[in-house]
Length: 295
Image 1 (cartoon, rainbow, N blue to C red):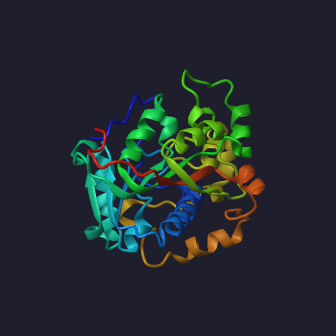
Image 2 (cartoon, one colour; image 1 turned 90 degrees about the vertical axis):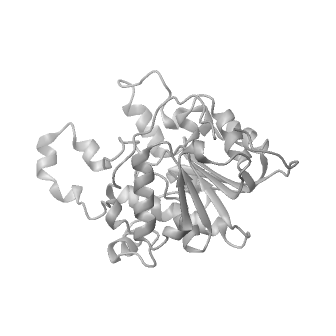
């Protein structure tokens, strides 16, 4: 079993991906995972059990499954598990995935690569969760969290003063502080790569799961929303039965969209720090004596 720690903000499980923002995030993160997983002899990989994605959870390792890696997705939510199975099957990868509840992971079972996507800011005891996740990794760990230095996070701080809750928002959680996070990661191994990912021109304003940025901005202005139907196009909304990522080729709108918008992935660090929605780390896990993984 993999303990999830004290959960501060339970993530809502989305039943679909919504909007260009989520679509581009998929594109950028899949590309990063594919690059970081290449030529490292990865045969098995795990993601979960928590996933802080704005869309459907449990799908970040699809590009590795396409390359032949045997993927395990752990989730405590039954609907999330059903969606993952449906999407992998639709991509022709049903034989490359095992979908389990966290307590179904075998004691001592380890994976060449473990991925944690934006889970740490969902937890109060995020260091304990990080330690438990890293214990499941035999070789590499990918940790992705919100970038608190992006201009979207700065704007959201200005907009959220009136609705601040008892828990820190994702962009102000301790786990997103680079110094605190790097110190915790270095206890697990050696940081081999560090970058900003999902760096389009538009800001990440941390809208509710399943809602577009434009829809959220217009929610308080129904007259304006009625005059701007084209801004809320659904061409980038994806249900489990027509999920395009992980297939052999993307539909033309998804292939062309990044070319029509300024994006800064793989650019200079200062551009990534300003535009990047997430910060990502690749850790080579320190070797340890053989023994059962922590429960």
